[in-house]
Each structure stands twice: as C-alpha cells, then as structure tokens.
Image 1 (tube, rainbow, N blue to C red):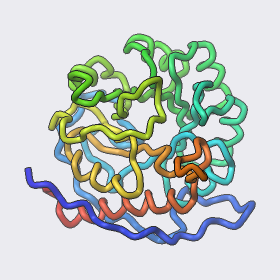
Image 2 (spheres, rainbow, N blue to C red; image 1 turned 30 degrees about the horizontal axis):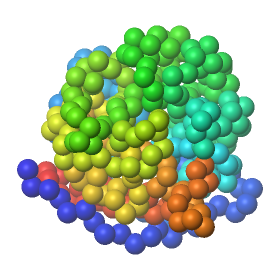
Image 3 (cartoon, rainbow, N blue to C red; image 1 turned 60 degrees about the horizontal axis):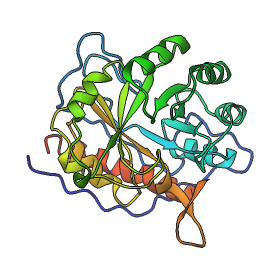
Amino acid sequence: MRKVQAPTLPAAHGALPPEGAHPALGRPSGGVTAPTLPAAHGALPPEGAHPALGRPSGGVTAARTRIKICGLTRESDVDAAVAAGVDAIGFVRYPPSGRYVTAAQAARLASRLPPMVTPVLLYVNADADEIAQDCALLPGAVLQFHGDEGAADCSAVARRCGRPYWRAARIPTPADGGFDLLEFARDFCTASAIVLDAHVEGFGGGGRTFDWSRLPPSVPAHLVLSGGLTPANVSAGLCELQGRGWSLAVDVSSGVEAIGADGRPTQGIKDANRIHEFVAAVRAVDALLARHPNP
C-alpha cells in the first residue's frame, strides 16, 4: 500500500475567545474547515457493535477525524480546546498523575462544555463505587480504562453506570516482546473504542510514541491513536494508520502542554497555541485524504 506523505503545516492562528466568553459549540475560531472525506476501508463492525465517538454503526466513517485533548485541569484550557474545535475532553481520575483532578473539579470543568463535546473520565484500576459516584456528577461522561482492568470488569462497570467505555491498549516496543492487538480487540469487543498508547513504566502520560507500522492492517474496532502525539507528528500517525480500523481518532495530552523552564511539558497545563496547531495539523490530513481517498 502506497503511503500518503503527511502534510507540513504552519501553526494555526485562530483567535481565542475573550476572557469570560463561553465558546460556542466547539467550533474553531481560526477557520480551518474539514472537507468531506470518504469512508475508511477497514472491516465493517458486526451487527449491533457500539459505534465510537458518535459514528454510525453502519460502517460509514465521519468526514473529519475526531480529536480528544486529555489531562485538562484549568477552565481556560477547556475553553481553548473547545474554541479549537475538539470533540472530547479528558479528565484524569488517577491520583498519582500530575494531571489528576477530583470528581468535583472534573464536574466543574465539564459544565463548561457545550453540546456535542464529550467529557471522558480516565481511570487506572479504580473502585467501581468510585466510578459510579463520578458518573452521578458528570452526566454523559464516557469511561476510559488504562490499568489492568479485565474485559469483564470494564463491561460490568459500564453497565452499572450506563456509560460506554474505551479501553487503552498499552503497545510495547519491539524489545519488550509481542503484543496481539487483534486478540486484545476481541477480548474487549464491548468497548466503544481501543486507545492505542505506548507502554511505559507506571500508567499513562509517558509522552512516548510506539512503532505505528507494526500494527495489524485490519483491526475489528474503532481506534484512537495516542501516545506521544504532537502538532509535528500527528499527521504522520494518521497517514500511517488510515484504514486499519473501523475509524481512527486521536488523543493528545503532553503534546499540547505548556513547556516549562526545564524544556519539558508542564503536566496539566495546556498551551492554547499548541492546541490550535494540533487541531490544524489534523484538519490538514483530512483535507489531504479528501484529495487522495485511497492511499
């Protein structure tokens, strides 16, 4: 399969909303509009499969790539992400993380979201009662599991809370041994999406990529590419993985965070300009694939 060259894109120049203004419906203020894109060529989901990220279950892929920004802790960052046109906002409910927020903080931040921007609650081996209590505070939130949770555990909590869930697949480097993504997708067939993240010591937020080319060509799941994405590399990741699942979305955290004096991302503090650059880079890939639908 001939690969599409990922586009080079300058930083987006969308203006942020004035202080105190409520962003409208998650539309970007900078003006990059996604073109219509034909359906991806991955296998169609089985009858009754749960669509991910608002996609229909009949196998028709939405025109634009869905974007999630994870690990938000501040109102201004939520507003900036919504203004840039993202589709989902992630709140980390894992206390050891530098991006951790309490359930009350997550609820307050989620209250700023307009319709059709989805809050996502990220957990690592959390207690089912805690998750149920969180869901009572955040109507409409999706659950995302990043720990050692088994398929039965995820399904049981999701049913109890009446919420869809995403399951993170921690992809190892080649030196760490093999990982069977097809088997993982079959085990978690009740998940709305499989999040492709790099395996790191501990859980989540490592800011590392993995070898995208080693993934199977056809995975029976909606896929969310994560792990070390930035405005500079997200276009390459999207071009590499097009058509490998029922649909393909992206999830970024450290790649849009403010850079501290030590030259490293500041966990939980996002950079509005980097958010807009990331979204613009994704939209450039959408435009590229609209011109070349069969890479």
